[in-house]
Amino acid sequence: MTFRHEPGAGPALVCVHGSAGNHHVYDRLLDAMPGRERYAINLPGRAGTDGPALDSVAQMEVFLSRFLESEVQGDYLIIGHSLGGGVALEHALSSASARLTGIVLLSTGARLRVHPTILQLFEQVVKSGASIPPLPPGLYERGSGPALVAEASKHRELTPIETGGLDWRACDSFNRMDDVKDIQVPALIIAGSQDALTPVKYAQYLADQIPDNELHILEGAGHMLVMERANETAELICRRL
Image 1: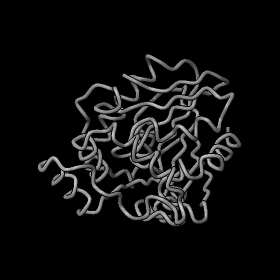
Image 2: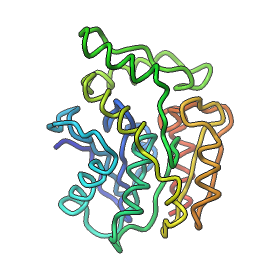
Image 3: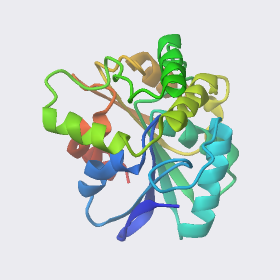
C-alpha cells in the first residue's frame, strides 16, 4: 500500500481520508505540523493502494487496524475527515488498543447519510464511463482560490470512480448514533460553519454524546477545511496533544 509518513515526536498522527479521496487531501495539514510523527494512508482501491475497494466503514476499520499493527510504533491518534471520521469513530468503539490516545474528527458525524442524488450520480458515471462528476455544493468555502480547487481535482483523479461510488455507499450506511456515547478516549471535533455535507449539527451531536471532547466551529469554512484551513486545524490539533 502507499501512504505518506513523516518522522517526528509522538504520539503518531494517523490520518484517514474521506469519500472518493486519498492521502493527498492531508498534504497541507501534514506540512503544517512539522516535528510531529504523522501518517496519511490510502484506503484500498486508490492512489497506489491495491483494491478491491471496501464497501463498509467496519471493513475500513479492519484495514486501519492492520496498518497500525504493521507500521505504527507506540501511541497514536486517529485523524479522520468525513468518511475517515466514521472510520476513526469505528476504531475508537471497536479497538481495545491501549495505544490509542485520542481521535480528531474533521467535518464528520455519527451518521453520514448521503443525498440520493450523489449516489445516483456516481452510479450513472460508472455505467457511462463519463468523467468525474461535479463536486457537491458546500465542499469549499466561499471565495476559495482556483489553485486550491485545481490541486484537489488533480489529486481526486487518483481515485477511480468505482471506488468513489463505494465510498459514498459506505458513508450512507454508517450509523453509530446510539454508540458514540461509549467512546472512552478524548475527541477533538472540528467543523465548518458553511459545511453543507456534514453540517454543524452533526458536530454538535458528537460533542453532546462523547464524554471527553472539545468542539471548534470554524466560521465560514466548508467541508474541505482540512485543506482550506490547514494551518488553523493543525494549531488546534497540536494544542490538544
